[in-house]
Length: 110
Image (cartoon, rainbow, N blue to C red; front, top):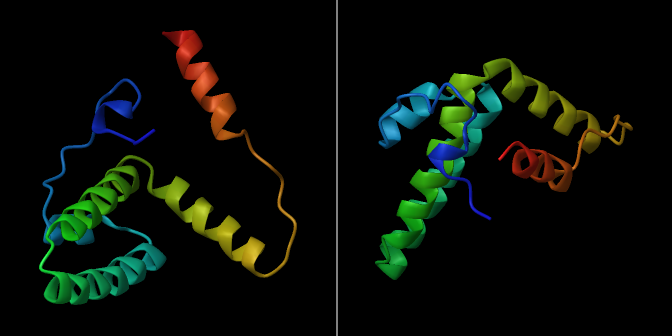
């Protein structure tokens, strides 16, 4: 399954231009901006070698989704990174709902 803009709950997708500048400026968490910058450098290097703009298009789409999430729920992005840091440090963290449970709930709602 791929996430699409219409996957956002009622209230709609945040209005965010699908450009590198708009995406980067919407990323409120420093870890997101750092990952975006590093990823963009790697993707541009790959495009220079392969001359395949598809990888850049995929990069822009995935980061656009993350930026929309950042605009819609900046605190959620901060919590996500805090949990990731705890996991990387070897700490145990409480488990949330699985993706399968969330998708089943969405299906039940219709």
